[in-house]
Length: 221
Image 1 (cartoon, rainbow, N blue to C red):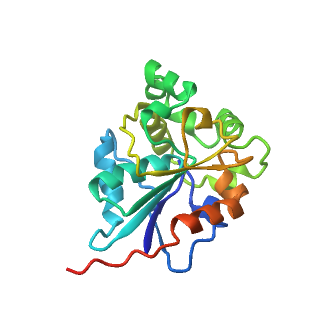
Image 2: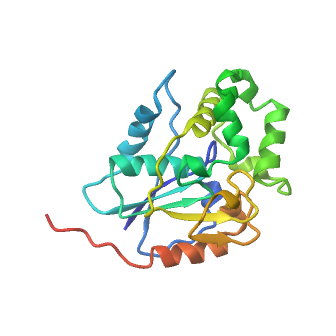
């Protein structure tokens, strides 16, 4: 069974590397694309979805912003299962912090230079939100193109989506990016910050083993 995976905003797959999937799962990682200037969100999602082969059954898994992306991809190419880690199922689950960005449009007017990886304030915000106790935090954030980062923050704050009840949501109970109090997740990782796929990989592996325990057979033509 193929599982197409999209990691978090600015993150490569190092944040997910400790997770163990069932042996019958074939993992296919979808790398982040740099958005074209003024590219609409739906056009970007369509480009991200090009790597997904929907000629046979497959599943989708996304972490953080990647969870938002795989739900959008699922509308173009429906999956057998959609699993999101540290992400939200609809705009109704946004935190007050993210809603403030949506209402004020602040992310849209922020200068691209603010997202330069030399900007110490960006590191401070990321560390505070994701995992304040993790000194190696930035090892997980490899995609640091300033335009991509600014664009992504805008899209998270502006995202509108109706909840799909079939989406399987896994959240950490210490996540302050997407606080658990705004959601009703299928699974809760105790003591999990936003980086729980890396820091609580054994717990996550056990949950995913349960979710993907059954093989999905190819449907005859």
